[in-house]
Image 1 (tube, rainbow, N blue to C red):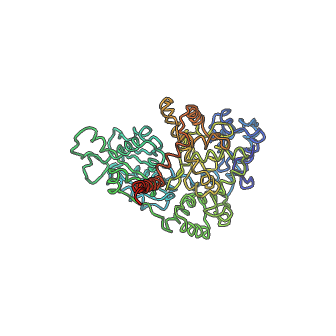
Image 2: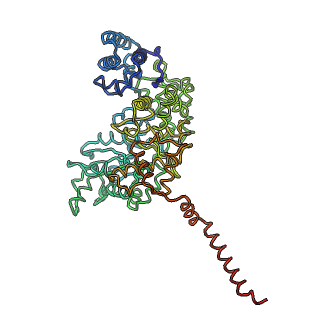
Length: 565
């Protein structure tokens, strides 16, 4: 089996040297998957894989668990760990090796990353003030403008830091709609029973349109969010609602203690116009996230570096500023490039030389991804392709978007688990519980291999997305025969996934069963009938009818005048 971990330079320092030795031990043990190793140890697969990532020195218990899972000698490795730990502490950059990276790469900033979130002070202040004044607030910006990070590392910590007198909320909740927003997140619409308001932050609101296929559930979830505006007395908007008056019923009084902040991609802003009440709310309170000024971009580069006791070459800062100015939605690409520079730092310095080596801001993502793929076997590459494409919803007149999926939908073998682990370690994918997602949508456009896969199989990908939803609905309806495919839809799915020149290997068991059952049900519309229906609906049917009418008129005139020369 090919190596699927990012390459390490064992001469780069004691942490990298120890991680490299762990990897060698694992290879000598037959390269067990981290999932298999987790079953032999008391630690999770991500924790064990992190021990050999080379980013920080693992704790001694984790290191020994890794060694035990690979059949190594605990005493020998404990002595090795102690020696390398002492070496790391004796270096001039003592303590730096144990610190996490100050950059987040393609991953969004979390609520715990406020001390590394730079360049957005004024926008955070504006968002906090608007949230205090309005009960429904929309944050709108292009993909890659940093909306998710602004909510989590900007707004949430700022609200927590408010004094009680200034209206610190009683609770803050965060969610993304997903395919079933009301079913999954309906309980979040009820404020907590405590003094102060509950703030519900809905990130990636566009999933309402890209993932939720049920228009009734979509409308009901939006209606639930808009109840935050119900019975709003129109006062100063402070979080302390003790002065509210005029509530006519218990439901309205409860609703008035909810505040909602949504983040929506700018290219989906027009879709919000499909809901009249949502339009009113957006018109009342929308904050637009624009591109960062050069000085703000500079802060995002040097601020985290200073927090991590790093130095950024001036020439590097100037080059990144120039590249960002020419690239819309460049923040995730810049952040990933900075993370790669941190991994390739010389001592404490991030260098322009390393930036050029990874292909600059645009090339860094592809560089990282291709390093992973270089270690895959052909079979693993095919598994990775199918896995990545399942995490994308192809746009229909709009940009492609990411699609979170359940782990069980992606991983159906030990080798698929190995591929997933490699992609997660490279921070191309993120795992949250049982859910898996692309780290950022920028990956779709910035990685040429993935972009080519999507473009070359776009129509098949659309068919697969519809098949996934239909199979899920069929299962939820206790396999109701009425939910099976029929007619032209069945013909298209069979041609794409079941014919001789196609493959059903990338279908899940339930999708394959749904399609096979649909085929066996024999609910086809004959191709000739399909063509006839398409012809009747086309403009040529009108032309044919006009020609037939002209012929009838000519024949009638001839018939009436044939005996009158």
